Every structure is written in C-alpha cells, then in structure tokens.
Length: 222
Ligand code: DX5
Ligand code: ZN
Image 1: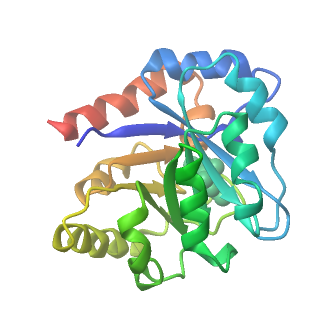
Image 2: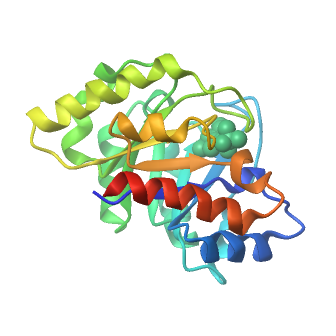
C-alpha cells in the first residue's frame, strides 16, 4: 500500500493559497486535506464550497474533504460538485451513515468515515464494507496545531485487525498533531494516509518540508 501525504489547508496562509498548493504539489504531496467546519458540530468555522470550487481550478491534487458538519448527507452533492474526490464525514454527525455513504458513492466520490478521539471503533464496524477510507482523529476536531493523542493509536491496531479478518482494503488516515518526530511511529501502526497541517504550512520552506515528510513516507512504504 502506498503511503500518502495529505497536507491540511487549514494551516495555510490564505493570502497565498495558490502558491502554497503549488509548493506542496512540487514537494510530492498526493492529496490536499480540506477541513470544513460549521460551528455546530465543532466550535469553529473554516471554509466551504466556494473556496473548494475555486482552488479546484488550479490544483491537480486529490481533494480529501473532511466534513465536520452536522447532517453531512445534505451537502454531499454540493461538495462533490465543488471538486471533492474523497468525502469523509463524522459518524457522530448523522443519523444515517449508511445513506450518507450510498450518496457519496452514487456521486462517484470515494467514501470516508471519521471518528472523534472518544468514539470507539465499534461505532463504525458495520459500515466498513462500504468505505474506502477510515479517518481516525488524534485531536478533538475543530482546530489545527493541537497536541497528538498517542493513546488513540490503539484504534488503528484494532482496525488493521478487523480489516484483515474481513478481508477489506480501506485506507487508514490519521489527523491531528502529526509532525516530523512522530510520523515514523504512526506509520508503523499501519496508517497509510497522513494529514499534517501546521507541521507543513508552518515550515519556513513548505516545499522542502513536504519532501522531508514524503521521504519518510516512502522509506516506510519499501
Ligand atoms: C482539525 C482538523 C485537522 C487539522 C490538523 O479539526 O481536522 O485536519 O487541520 O492540523 P495539525 O496537523 O496542525 O494538527
Ligand atoms: Zn481534518
């Protein structure tokens, strides 16, 4: 399985978004992680459909959208039309995870289901047959730059085991507090998609930092 880097736009300088997207692309990032917040599911508001639509015009990166909004099923179509390639939603945010997954699939996007740090893996087991990706939060969703919750990594081990038992092949993505010092250990647990916001966009040289991350990711793929 190829290891993938998904830098989180939340930490970018929004006066230079085009330029910074180019820098991560040149550095080798495959995805861009787009954090959508509604001020209800999480205590923060970020950006939404028009912003994604606008950057879609000048980026070839895979758009990895992380919806932190209530009733995500209401917006699947709009985010897909705006350019989302992968649509991740929180299992805690909807009464109909199955229907939401079906909607994402019918729109031709990849499906992703996400759990907050205190939500157990058992909450999503019955949906795993339908998902292309599981996103495990290692910070409380809502803000970038928080401390990595290492104890949540046991969920990755649990998921890897279930994936094997059920003979499935979904990706496992980690989001929150990832940096150059802990990324190796994270990859060792079986994660193959890495989100990093402040660790990438907070760097002096974004392209160089992206490449440094990629070097570690590729080393671990071998
Ligand atoms: C938090 C977001 C994260 C965030 C990660 O709610 O889901 O994607 O941008 O930021 P860092 O990498 O700085 O923890
Ligand atoms: Zn995120």
